[in-house]
Image (cartoon, rainbow, N blue to C red; front, side):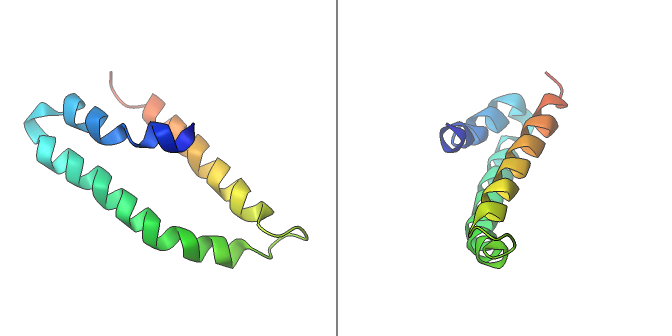
Length: 77
């Protein structure tokens, strides 16, 4: 469910800021690019942080998802 919702961020950004549409879409796509590059390195780094492999990686993804939800809830409607 989470990855499906992320795909709509660029449309949300474009509709929310019509006067800065290009910048909004570029920012969302650049964030996805950074996540695609940094994500695998973070997952590997967090792999053995706990006794069960990759538990810390999944917890980190959950924390990022919750922080994104909190951030989005604070945006003006």
